[in-house]
Amino acid sequence: MGLPLLEGMLPGGFAASATAKPPVRLGWVYFPNGMVRESWTPKGTGRDFEFNTTSAPLAPVRDHVMLITNLAHDRARPNGDGAGAHAREGATFLTAVQAKKTGGKDIYLGESIDQVIARQIGRQTRLPSLELGVEPNRKEGRCDSGYSCIYMSNISWRSTTQPSSVEINPRRAFDRLFGAKGEDGARFRERSAARQSVLDFVGEDASRLQKQLGATDRRKLAEYLESVRAVERQIAQMKSLPPIDVPAGSRPSGEPEDFVAHTRLMYDLMALAWQTDATRVITFMLANSQTNRVYENLGIKSGHHQLTHSTGQDGDIQKIDEFVTAEFARFVAKLRDIPEGQGSLLDNCLITLGSAMGDGRKHDHGELPVVVAGHANGAVAGGRHLKLESETPMSNLFVPTAQLAGVKLDRFGDSRGSLAALAGS
Image (cartoon, rainbow, N blue to C red):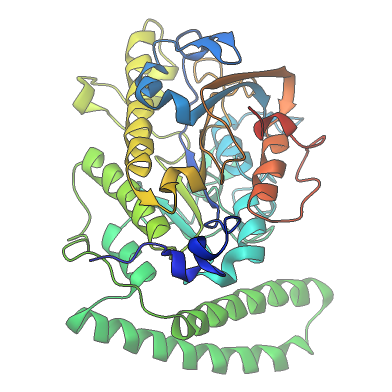
């Protein structure tokens, strides 16, 4: 049997103190190319709202979701940098920072909100954070009007120049979370031990080298050393915390060829990671920005990005949007059905589904389609449509999200304050 977060694992336990609560888990699920706006935007506001065609799959979990309209990502707009809407939307989604337009290695962006939070609460779990994806990560080359492909393959950034590595293989993600068993487990432990010794050697060597470098190279080397130290801390942390038992047969067999099964498997891993408290911060890219995936499962013959540039294809684009929403609703229902404490796992989560592109046909970055699911220990009520003032920065949503996880944060990116209405009824 798996070991979810038990009452006895909390200070005093639930039975000993009525105020003791499970930790808040945070997640961000990113989809590219926005959504067909007229099919997405709900009708009515507050609790008196109606789902639209695309958001209709959320009806079975209505009481657990909040639809938010009029959020915007200004830093995903050109702002003098010309074309490149797709690269900027992926880069800006969780950083709220304008990406440096470059196709070379001199990338420059900003730390993403998930990593800001993970730095403060990540030491309490086996992994500070987990970054998942479905499509291969591109680390080199130019992808969108002079922007590096790196911007399109990563939404999580540990620093201004260092994206987090996206894991697309379910088995490797599982092993990172829980450690492998048997022969695979032995190899896993050997690699960890070898990596630890290599890091020790590299760290000492780099420290000596730092004294011989100029200011720019010292900064780059300092960032590298910090990444080394982060890995060292992670390895030490995994050794110091007790092992996690998970249900027999829950380790994935590999990487499914079918992307629907692949996506669902990643969602299931997110649920398992939170249920066992292996990590509390997860990002999941349903696809890279500017994806041209062909949704053959929906009877569609053209690629997603291609459809947004074609006339008369609104129906097919809307089908994709509705599919994305339905899969997210399935995930939310799964979290709702997992018991934890006096309620469910969903009661202690806060997951944002969204994009930094509003409508892919227009390639705009306002009126973003955003859903927030979960209740963050009872602080957030669902069953609402929160219609904000036009052009409210998306980063305004990130501030209270961090605060609900116990992180002290007053501003982030281009925020103009905290979206206080998030924690309301």
